[in-house]
Length: 393
Ligand code: SAH
Ligand code: SF4
Image 1 (cartoon, rainbow, N blue to C red):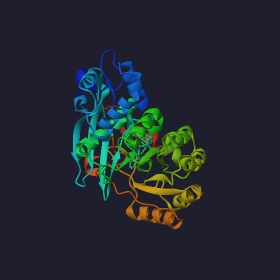
Image 2: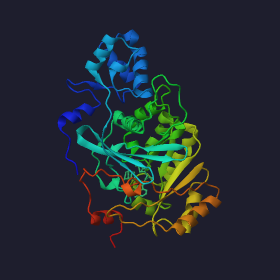
Image 3: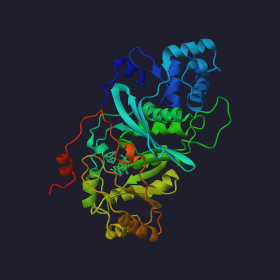
Image 4: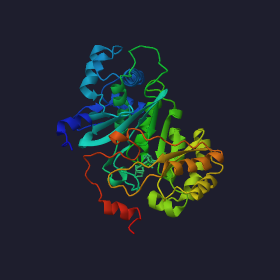
């Protein structure tokens, strides 16, 4: 739709050091920020304290202008402004659904665009964050999967999505105000575009910032990372991030899962379940969320429900049933409401919570699996999608 941004604009959002441009502080770990300050003239002895001060301005009070950092000397503020910037992605479009869901299209360096979705609910609000432009995986029911990977997002671009949402919600506290426990943006789910575990370090660094006690201050229990099943990274997620884990399970036999979630050919159901069994202990979290998209006549039978219960035996789990969200050219249909309820019932009777996820923001294509930036034109044809889904007939 929209043409690429002029180069100058893109350069402003680049989070890494440019040959002669300023460095974006957003997305740097505390250690990296300290190194950057020292490299640019801050005395080593003061660096840790300066990081603490700047950090609070950026992540607790939402300040983007060094001149507003009033606990720093004027001359030092000016020095900082010469060497550094505080940049977040640029919001290109903002759509609000009838149900209050907000979808932002944000532009990142290189003129790429990703989608961010805010979902308000009773007593909480969840931000669905993207981790990649496109996705290397090709789950056959997922709109993002029809878009080739363009690149990984940087940590700054990931935490920057949270910051632009807080900007739009008007949620930065008054400077110096006491901590406010009621939050419009209270939860983060890494369920937007991309496979977060194929961008591990950047996702980890961004989530550390989200959890930092002197910044955005979200508890690790309010952050959920969803993976299609990148088995070797699951242990690291538990050990290095410690957030809640959701897994795109979607099928109860390898044969069907190979088609729906092709990464299953690399790490099958058994390998995935083994990795999941260890997760709660290592991360000290409670339950794993099994996401299960309901596809008519593909994975929604009573037998599937019984098999699912058997497979997850012994894993503290909740099963999130997701009615399939259609997108132009999608090769599947959503299961009927009766079928979904019958499926949920079997799981519930086996002792697991089995909430059916209400699609949100469908009128603005903001629902799960509908995300795909319109500017990326690597769209596959319907025929190709069907062939990969094994529906060739
Ligand atoms: N790549 C990660 C996270 C992003 S997808 C993953 O696959 O887990 C977020 C969730 O939406 C996943 O469970 C995914 O399987 C689901 N999803 C994808 N396309 C969908 C669609 N068309 N309808 C419903 N859910 C979908
Ligand atoms: Fe990628 Fe997740 Fe979509 Fe699969 S479901 S194609 S892993 S974004």
